[in-house]
Each structure stands twice: as C-alpha cells, then as structure tokens.
Amino acid sequence: MTNNPALSTNFIQSIITDDLKNNGNASSVHTRFPPEPNGYLHIGHAKSICLNFGLARDNQGLCNLRFDDTNPSKEDVEYVDSIQEDVHWLGFDWDDRKFYASNYFDKLFDCAVTLIKKGKAYVCDLSADEMRQYRGTLTEPGKDSPYRNRSIEENLDLFARMKAGEFADGSRVLRAKIDMSSSNLNLRDPAIYRILHAHHHRTGDKWCIYPMYDFAHPLSDAFEGITHSICTLEFEDHRPLYDWLIETLATECRPRQIEFARLNLTHTVMSKRKLRQLVEENLVSGWDDPRMPTISGLRRRGYTPESIRDFCERIGVAKSNSLVDVGMLEHCVREDLNSKAARAMAVLRPLKVVIDNYPEGQIEQLAAENNPENPEMGTRTIPFAKVIYIDQEDFREEPPKKFFRLAPGREVRLKYAYIIQCVEVIKDEATGEIVELHCTYDPDSKSGGATAGRKVKGTLHWVADAGAVAAEVRLYDYLLNDENAADEDDFKAGLNPHSLECLTNCIVEPSLANAELGSRYQFLRQGYFCVDTVDSKPGKLVFNRIVSLRDTWAKLQKA
Ligand code: ATP
Ligand code: MG
Image (cartoon, rainbow, N blue to C red; front, side, top):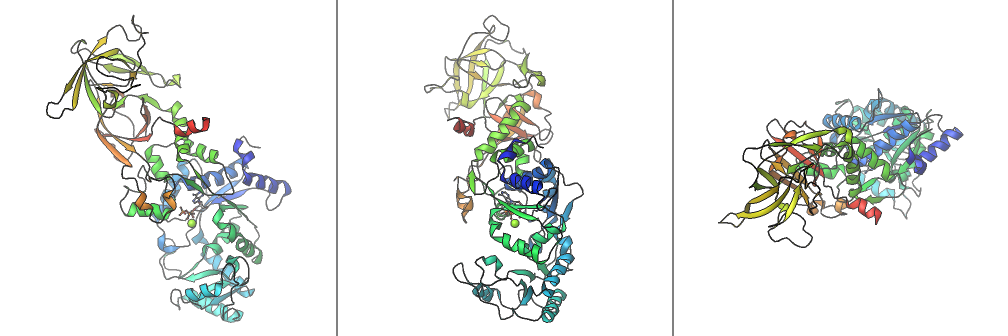
C-alpha cells in the first residue's frame, strides 16, 4: 500500500490501518492541518504538516487546510497568506479544501443551541474568578454553579441576548453541562462560548460571541468529515470533552482524536508567542530572518523543502515529548545539498597573495568540476592569475602542530591549480597586520603537468583577482546559547549576541556573478550558502550560510 518506510514505526499509521481494516470510524482517511493564523509557521508545524498531509497521501485520503480563527483579536491576513505559501512550499496541497473555523460560526451557534435544548448547556453569570473557585482542583471536586439549573427557556433567551450584544465582555459564558465532580477538569462544565466585542478579520463585526477552541475544534472536524484528528499531547486531557461533544451532538461523522509529541529542538525557540516577541522587539529582522526556525526563515536561509520533509520523517512520531538535536536538521540539509549544490570557491576574509614567478598579465582558464558527487553537473572554468586571494585563516606565520595550510616556507596546493610556496610575508608597519604574501608556483604542478602528482599536505580554495566578484556573506549561529532554554520565560536573557556575523569584504569566483536569487552552492571547505532573496540585488551579492560542512550530528551517530 505504501512505499514509505517510516510507516511501519508510526503508531498513528498503525491505528489508521486498524481502523481501515475493521471499518471502525473510517472507510477512508481524512485529516486536516489546523493552524491558528496568529503567527508564521515554524519547523514544529512542519512536523504536523508532513504528518497530516503524509498520512492522507499514504492512505489515498485527503487532508484539509483549516484556519482555526476562533480568536479574533490576534489574527491577521498576513499570517493566513504566509501559512498557505509555506504549506505549498513544503510540497503539500489542499486542492479546494481550504476552510476557516469562522465559516462555521453559524453552524457552531446552532450546535450550542442544540446543546441548550438538550439540557446540556447553560448560561453562567459567575465571574472568571468565581468560576475558578467553583472549579475545584485536581484533588478536590468542583461545586455546581448557582446558574447550573436555569431552565432551557431562560438559557435560550440569555444566549440569544448574548449574541445580540446585550451584555458586556466577560459578564456571562455559555457552559457545557457535564460533571463538576469529574476527575478530569476539562469536563467540569467547560465554557464553550464567551462574549467578546471584537472585530474579526473575516466575519467583521457580525459576532460579539465567539466559540472556545475546545468546542469549535471537534465540531469543525465533524463538519468536514475528518476521520483522524491529529493533535499534540497537551490535548490528551481534552479528548474526553472532544468525544462528549461528538456523542452528545450525535454528529454524522465521528472523528477520532489522536495525540502525538510536539517537536522541540535544541537551541531553538518554538512558540509562536515568543517568536512574535523576537520580531516585534526587533531582535531579529522579521519572521523570515534566516536565524528564525520559521518555515519562511529556513527557506530564506536556504533550506530545501526536501531536507525538511526528510527531517520530519526521521524524527518519527512518538507519544512522549523529547528534545531533538538541531544538528539533525542541519545533517538533513547537508545530505540533500551534497549531491544538488554546485561547488564554488569563495574567500570570506581575503588575504592577498602575489605569485612572483607567474607572468604579469597572464590569465589561465582552469577546469573545475561542478559537483564531484554528481558528474552530470559538468564543469566550469576558473581564471588563474598572478594575484589571488586566500582566506586569512589559511595562513599562519607561526603554524601550530597539525596546521597543514600555508606558512612561511611551506607548500600547499591551490585547488584545481598549482602548488605554491610562501616566500615572503608583508605586514603593515604600523599595526603589524599581515597584508600580503609573496609566493612562487611550480609551473608543472597543475593537472597534466610533470609534477601534478606531487603530494603536499594541504589544499586551499582561492579566488583570482581577475574577474572576482565582491559579495557579502552572512554567517549564522544559534539564536539561543543554551540547548535547553527555549521554555524559560526570560528566554531573551539567553539570546546569543553572536548569532549573526556579517562579512562585507568577501570575494567569490566569476561564475557566481549572475547567481540567481535563492540558488545554493557549496563553497569549498566552508559550507553551503544561498543567495539571499531579500537583500541580494544586481551589483550586490549577499549570501546566507545555510550550514557549515562540519557535521557533528553524523559523527555522534557513528560513535
Ligand atoms: P505554538 O505553541 O508554537 O504557538 P500552536 O500549537 O499554538 O503552536 P497552532 O497554529 O495551533 O500552533 O498549530 C497548528 C497545528 O500544528 C496544531 O495541530 C499543532 O498541534 C501543531 N503544532 C504546533 N507546534 C508543533 C510542534 N512543535 N510540533 C508538532 N506539531 C506542532
Ligand atoms: Mg494553538
């Protein structure tokens, strides 16, 4: 039925397989992804998207996109648009099944009226504080509200007047009448409608009462014919209420709620509320700042949808919360780009090298492979000239042990080119800073030459001044210093002040002069980089570092 290897270990798929076999609640599979449009989607949402759309795909079913917009004050069309863009970019499609919980406000109102008529809901005038007192605790049962036994007629009248706007915000709520002594606090007559005179981004000022999430969600699922309503673990205790509503209202469709563990990542803030704080307080450049764990941030950084889907597959679906190493996400994008990204040479912190015995004015075009992992990507040429640049890090005047790069008197190979030897170091007289190296080259050491096979310990990347292109390169580090600090209330105290390093004097090889926005490269020895889609312009190339080449996560797996 499926060629998806993760399915065998996915407990939700097992439940679905059983349901399909026993024709339990379903002869087909219909899931939904229900974001609240109060922020941009993040990598945690990607897990839910891959799961919901993936289960539908793997079981020949359908998955809806539903905006869970029952909370009018925090919502915005900007978020609605970004969410659709992100789901599409990840590679999933809802066809014509884009819904809004707010589309169901009339039907939800009718359901509430039905509950009242069945004697299963009542209007309660307790204040929020009083409601809390009456509610009891985990160890003590609650007490019945003095309004619990209002007549059906009175409840219908009051609820209609709530809708008509006669009462102030917070003065009354509609509550389900379930059981004030239940061991599950969610069943102690939960509020299902509240008064809120607020403008809604879709329904305008039509409503001044809004359904609570726990009421709207199961019923929206039922209206849409959802068979498996997959949500995160914190809703496990809400499931009895979910089931109570579905049973009491005897909806035609009987969706089944299944909970899974949400994704947490090391060094990563994952709550929309906190991400919004970072944006609003200008601690990042926006929701799409390449350091953000948002889908739009990851996209701008250079992550591929394939790598994110692969990551979501590898982390699997579990029943208990855990913290995933962000190194695993980085590993996935490295793996994906290794065979896809063209290689290029870039020097991030340039050090000028003059090759004394190379003819003045001569330029050679040397052949370079575009991707050794993928020969089909072909070759390009790179100019070589008397003046080249190497990275400052690749030269040490006093090299420590095991430093196999350039040093006075030492030889290294320049990738695709010659062996050079350092013969002189030129310093700024005032500062002592090294400003230029002089080298000689071995003219027979390039590919095909008599000494081409000569072994030297190090090979360096370089860029010749002929045709070199100026660029800005942005290096990113984690937003949070601590692996684990995302849950702390003052998470901002743990923000990494060095999460962005902007290098403005970089030079890249001529073939990148017309690099397309969003295109990705492996800069030899340095990592994977992506042309920034926002700040890169003709005449000003800006690259984001997606990841370095060092894969600590893969190493850990082998150890
Ligand atoms: P946040 O806590 O970040 O604000 P949320 O749960 O309030 O997230 P919603 O817009 O309500 O955000 O989420 C839409 C769907 O995505 C829900 O089904 C939710 O369970 C799921 N989801 C949200 N965060 C994660 C996560 N970290 N891992 C897996 N699924 C998630
Ligand atoms: Mg939510």
